[in-house]
Image 1 (spheres, rainbow, N blue to C red):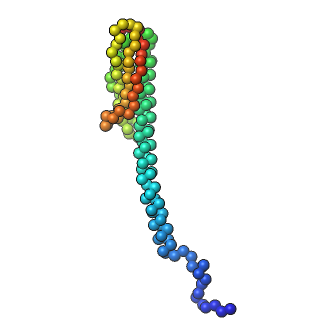
Image 2: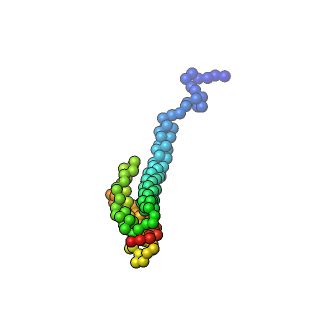
Image 3: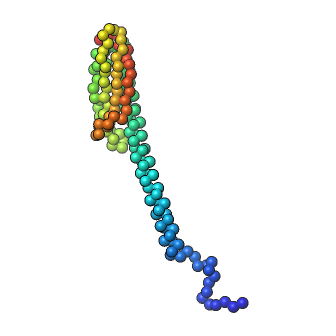
Length: 139
Protein backbone atom coordinates (compact mmCIF):
# COMPACT_ATOMS: atom_id res chain seq x y z
CA UNK A 1 0.00 0.00 0.00
CA UNK A 2 1.54 3.21 -1.10
CA UNK A 3 0.20 6.68 -0.41
CA UNK A 4 1.33 9.88 -1.91
CA UNK A 5 2.16 12.57 0.57
CA UNK A 6 -0.17 15.60 0.62
CA UNK A 7 -3.15 13.82 -0.93
CA UNK A 8 -6.35 13.54 1.08
CA UNK A 9 -9.33 11.43 0.37
CA UNK A 10 -12.10 13.38 -1.46
CA UNK A 11 -14.54 12.97 1.44
CA UNK A 12 -12.29 15.03 3.75
CA UNK A 13 -12.33 18.18 1.58
CA UNK A 14 -15.16 19.84 3.57
CA UNK A 15 -17.43 22.57 2.24
CA UNK A 16 -16.00 24.77 -0.45
CA UNK A 17 -16.58 28.41 -1.22
CA UNK A 18 -18.85 27.61 -4.17
CA UNK A 19 -21.20 25.56 -2.00
CA UNK A 20 -21.43 28.37 0.58
CA UNK A 21 -22.19 30.99 -2.09
CA UNK A 22 -24.89 28.79 -3.64
CA UNK A 23 -26.53 28.15 -0.25
CA UNK A 24 -26.53 31.89 0.55
CA UNK A 25 -28.09 32.59 -2.86
CA UNK A 26 -30.83 30.01 -2.26
CA UNK A 27 -31.58 31.41 1.20
CA UNK A 28 -31.83 34.88 -0.32
CA UNK A 29 -34.31 33.65 -2.93
CA UNK A 30 -36.38 32.05 -0.17
CA UNK A 31 -36.38 35.28 1.87
CA UNK A 32 -37.38 37.38 -1.16
CA UNK A 33 -40.28 35.03 -1.96
CA UNK A 34 -41.62 35.13 1.65
CA UNK A 35 -41.29 38.91 2.11
CA UNK A 36 -44.43 39.91 0.11
CA UNK A 37 -46.49 37.41 2.11
CA UNK A 38 -45.32 38.93 5.38
CA UNK A 39 -46.04 42.49 4.20
CA UNK A 40 -49.52 41.45 3.04
CA UNK A 41 -50.21 39.70 6.36
CA UNK A 42 -49.17 42.79 8.35
CA UNK A 43 -51.39 45.06 6.22
CA UNK A 44 -54.37 42.73 6.61
CA UNK A 45 -53.78 42.52 10.35
CA UNK A 46 -53.76 46.32 10.63
CA UNK A 47 -57.02 46.62 8.67
CA UNK A 48 -58.77 43.98 10.81
CA UNK A 49 -57.56 45.69 13.99
CA UNK A 50 -58.99 49.02 12.79
CA UNK A 51 -62.34 47.45 11.91
CA UNK A 52 -62.50 45.67 15.29
CA UNK A 53 -61.75 48.90 17.16
CA UNK A 54 -64.38 50.74 15.08
CA UNK A 55 -66.90 48.01 15.91
CA UNK A 56 -66.24 48.48 19.62
CA UNK A 57 -66.72 52.24 19.29
CA UNK A 58 -70.04 51.72 17.46
CA UNK A 59 -71.18 49.51 20.35
CA UNK A 60 -70.15 52.16 22.88
CA UNK A 61 -72.17 54.82 21.03
CA UNK A 62 -75.27 52.62 21.08
CA UNK A 63 -74.69 51.92 24.78
CA UNK A 64 -74.82 55.70 25.40
CA UNK A 65 -78.37 55.65 24.03
CA UNK A 66 -79.32 52.57 26.08
CA UNK A 67 -78.00 54.25 29.24
CA UNK A 68 -80.65 56.97 29.06
CA UNK A 69 -83.20 56.69 31.88
CA UNK A 70 -86.56 55.09 31.07
CA UNK A 71 -89.03 56.12 29.82
CA UNK A 72 -86.96 57.57 26.98
CA UNK A 73 -87.91 60.78 25.27
CA UNK A 74 -87.10 61.79 21.72
CA UNK A 75 -85.47 65.02 22.97
CA UNK A 76 -83.08 63.07 25.22
CA UNK A 77 -81.98 60.88 22.33
CA UNK A 78 -81.59 63.88 20.00
CA UNK A 79 -79.31 65.50 22.60
CA UNK A 80 -76.79 62.70 21.96
CA UNK A 81 -76.82 63.25 18.19
CA UNK A 82 -73.70 64.44 16.40
CA UNK A 83 -70.02 63.60 16.26
CA UNK A 84 -68.42 62.25 19.39
CA UNK A 85 -64.91 62.84 20.65
CA UNK A 86 -62.16 61.67 18.30
CA UNK A 87 -60.46 58.51 19.58
CA UNK A 88 -56.83 57.51 18.96
CA UNK A 89 -55.75 53.92 19.56
CA UNK A 90 -52.33 52.62 20.64
CA UNK A 91 -51.18 52.25 17.02
CA UNK A 92 -51.97 55.91 16.31
CA UNK A 93 -55.09 55.28 14.18
CA UNK A 94 -57.70 58.01 14.67
CA UNK A 95 -61.44 57.29 14.71
CA UNK A 96 -64.42 59.65 14.56
CA UNK A 97 -67.66 58.22 16.03
CA UNK A 98 -70.98 59.83 15.14
CA UNK A 99 -74.56 59.25 16.26
CA UNK A 100 -77.41 60.10 13.86
CA UNK A 101 -80.99 60.14 15.15
CA UNK A 102 -83.85 59.64 12.71
CA UNK A 103 -87.15 61.52 12.71
CA UNK A 104 -89.15 61.43 15.89
CA UNK A 105 -92.51 59.64 15.50
CA UNK A 106 -95.70 61.61 14.87
CA UNK A 107 -97.56 59.77 17.65
CA UNK A 108 -96.30 58.53 21.01
CA UNK A 109 -95.32 55.99 22.14
CA UNK A 110 -93.29 55.24 19.03
CA UNK A 111 -89.93 54.18 17.62
CA UNK A 112 -87.02 56.30 16.45
CA UNK A 113 -84.12 55.04 14.33
CA UNK A 114 -80.59 55.61 15.66
CA UNK A 115 -77.48 55.09 13.51
CA UNK A 116 -73.98 54.86 14.96
CA UNK A 117 -71.08 55.18 12.52
CA UNK A 118 -67.33 55.30 13.00
CA UNK A 119 -65.11 56.73 10.29
CA UNK A 120 -61.37 57.01 9.84
CA UNK A 121 -60.61 60.54 11.08
CA UNK A 122 -57.88 61.01 8.46
CA UNK A 123 -59.42 59.60 5.28
CA UNK A 124 -63.10 59.83 6.20
CA UNK A 125 -63.70 56.21 5.17
CA UNK A 126 -66.52 54.46 7.02
CA UNK A 127 -65.10 51.60 9.11
CA UNK A 128 -68.21 50.35 10.94
CA UNK A 129 -71.85 51.28 11.44
CA UNK A 130 -74.97 49.95 13.12
CA UNK A 131 -78.63 50.92 13.07
CA UNK A 132 -81.05 50.31 15.93
CA UNK A 133 -84.60 51.26 16.77
CA UNK A 134 -85.32 52.86 20.14
CA UNK A 135 -88.72 52.93 21.83
CA UNK A 136 -89.64 56.45 22.93
CA UNK A 137 -92.54 57.32 25.22
CA UNK A 138 -92.67 61.09 24.77
CA UNK A 139 -91.38 63.93 22.58
